[in-house]
Image (cartoon, rainbow, N blue to C red):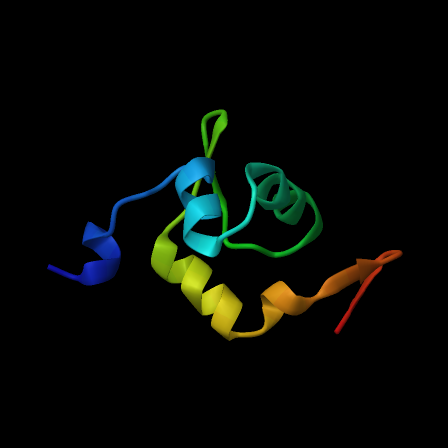
Length: 71
């Protein structure tokens, strides 16, 4: 079976632990960045492989300044 299909979804707690940040940081990233988060009902869910790709791509290093993102 394809790994992307069989990979389990995780919640904010697990995503925060995986990335070594707080739950509040994850929530802020959902609002202010293009973190790969998926809304399922009222819950935010993540695939750890998508989070890892997001970090490796450098997009997690973008800092919001006004309405623009700058490195």
